[in-house]
Length: 334
Image 1 (cartoon, rainbow, N blue to C red):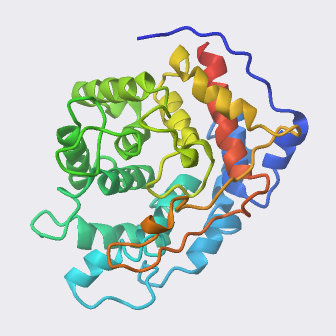
Image 2: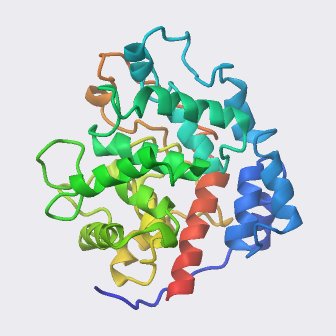
């Protein structure tokens, strides 16, 4: 493994930190305090920010559109089959997608509305005896659900552990993963590594650590974006990412897993640093799906409608926070 590169990591200016600490988005404020300013979870300011995540800002807006039973669909499904489908479809509008964002924003099952959503997922997509479950589905969906439920606080549940077992089984010979059966791994399929990154180190058995090492090597060999012909969407930054990949996703996952000192990150870090604005912020470049029109349909042939938390083309608190987290990890590891 190629370790020990030297990178001059620019420190965020006080104006950027003050912007991230503004009270309008308590998730950003909480993670700025903990991840950039070294405040512990027991710090009173962190506690106050954490307590406000479901009350104001992006998470509160998402929860405000949730139905009382814990789902986001336009109408209540009536059968197990329709529940199982409607939790995922239509793409990016149904329950799985806002739930993923709530997990990213820091909500857990201590919030009753999150707990209701988790119960719907367990009841209709994680029944051990049901044919309508995630346990043998494409790893991109499995990884998203495993990451989400782990962050919600269900990482020790045997059904969630079974999702991790499936990701271990589905890792390809070249170290990556792929949503297509019997195909080599591809950079596009990052969700398994992201799910492993959500596990505390103390909850990563040897077989998980081995999968992480093989998966990280797969990404590092390709410098996080060198696979096939150049692909412009990988060099643009997005959020929510849903199940799409970009170089910031790769940097966030690899540095969270402890690879911030690997010199093969340098090309991707150069992309990150070039995209930093003169005021020290980063822009939300595009809304997903940032793909050609031929891929803007879901499996039922319906047009996919994306959404964002922040305006496209404007400085983004979430993208800036993520970028600064990456640079902080790299600086500490170098």
